Length: 411
Image (cartoon, rainbow, N blue to C red):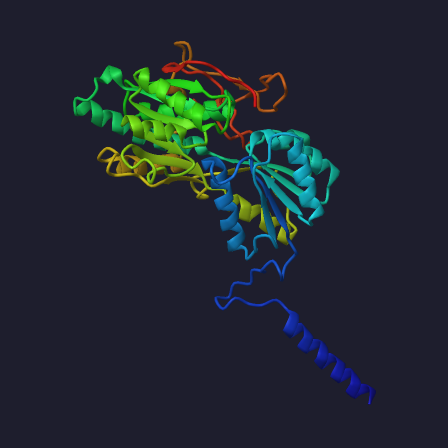
C-alpha cells in the first residue's frame, strides 16, 4: 500500500511539474516570459510627455521593449510623464518602488541626483538613468547610466545637410561662401556640444566651406523659444537649420520660411513636408530590453552602457527624398560602413582645429564634479575618443567654424 501511495504521489508531482513548468516556444526558444521567470515590474520616468519629440522617443521605446518582453502597461510597467528635474523625480521614483517596481528608468539629465538619492534608499531596486554621468563614480551596484554613440548619427545627418548645401550651391541658389547652417541648442552641456559639433563635422566632410551659428534657448522644451531661435538664425543668413531641442518650434520656423531642416529624435516630415530632410535619434528599446531582461534573469547591469550603430541604438529616420539632395542615401550608407569598421572617426583631429591649432591632447571632465575639472586624457591615435571612458558625452571643445551667438549653462 505504501509503495502504491508513493507511486501515486510521484505521478501527481510529475503531472504538477508538467502543468506548471516552463513552456517551450514552438520554435525551440526556451526564453522565459515574465510570468514564468523572475517577476518584474518596471517604472519609466520622463521629463515631458509625447508632445516632446525627446520624451516621445523614450516612451515609444519603452512600449516597444515591454511588448517584446510580454509586459502589460499599467500591470507590469508604468510610465510617469511630466516629471520635473526636481524633488518631484525622487517622489515619483519612491512611489514606483512602493508600487512594486524592481527596475526604474529616468530619461533626462537633471533627474540624476534624485535617482541616485532613491537608489541609495532602495538597494534592492535597480535604477537606470539615461544621459547621466555619475554611475561610474558613485559605485552603487543598483545605479546605472546609459547613452549611445549618437554623435555618429549626428555626423551622418550632417552629411545629408552638407549634400543639400552642395546641391544649393550647384543650382546657383547660394554661393559656396554662403553655406552657413544654424543650430538651435538647449544648454551648453557636453551632450549638446558633442551633438552640434558632430553634425557640423559631418556636413564639413562633404561641403568644406560650411560654417555654423549656434543659439541656445536655456530649456529642453520651449516651442516659442525654439521657433524664435530658428527664426533668428534664418534672419542671420543660415541656409539650413538643425537642433538639439525637443519641440516642433525650429522645424515649423523652417517650414514657414522654406529653409531645409534636419530634425532630431524623430521625423517631422508629416508636419514639415517641404523642408524636412532627415532625423537622427537614439533607439532606446535595445537598452530597455537588455536591462529589464537582466532583472528577470538575475544578472548584472553595466554601470555604463553604450549603444552603437551595430546594436541598432543609433538610427536615422525617414530620408525625405523630395527635399534631400540626390545621392544622399548612398553617401550616408558609405559613411555608415566606414564608421562601423572604424575606418573613420567622428572627432578625427585632422578634420578640425581649435583657435587655429590642431588638437593633439585634451583632458576632459569624465569624472564629473561641480567645477567640471578636467581629469582624463581623451585624445589618442589621432582622434578625440568620445564614449570610451563613460557612456555620456564629454566632448566640450569649441572648434573653429562654429560661432556661438550666446551661451546658456545649467538646467
